[in-house]
Amino acid sequence: MSVTGSAYPQVGERAPELSLVDQEGATRTLSEVVRDRHALLVFYPFAFSSICTGELLEIQLNVDEFVNDRVQVYGISCDPMHALRAWAAREGYRFPLLSDFWPHGEAARAYGVFDEESGMSVRGTFLVDPTMTVRWNLVHPPGEAREIGALHRAVRDL
Image 1 (tube, rainbow, N blue to C red):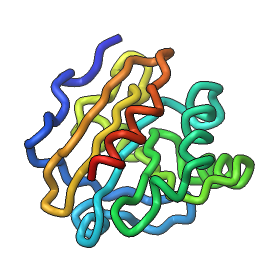
Image 2 (cartoon, helix red, strand yellow):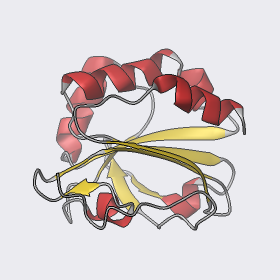
Image 3 (cartoon, rainbow, N blue to C red):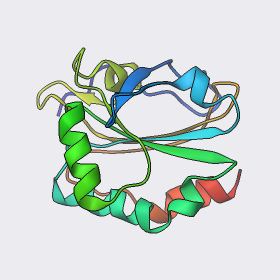
Image 4 (tube, helix red, strand yellow):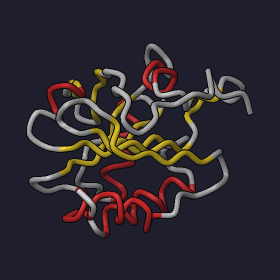
């Protein structure tokens, strides 16, 4: 695995700006979405894959904890928008899935979680506050699922 830069934003550092389309084609810009609440950015390798589906279903099962007046979760992958739309419809996700398809992996590169060899992001999770500061992070390589309890704790500690 060759992760671009392999240095991802640390707690207390400024979060890189990103502007991506969601599964419905709406552009989501980080500096705009964090104006009134934290953003939980969940980078994952591929839509429709078993570990990614399991992780996002765990978020969906607890959606009220991850989508409320304090925080909004955003799933991010290098999949095209239409694939994300089909996956969200199939799984019933009620939160935005952002496409980092083109320029391919640009957001994942900015967050240091893009795997150059496979052309996908690794499992990087970043909690960004309204000042665009990283408040929490968690990064796992492909094939290793995130511990969803860690996401719960990070959001509860807001």
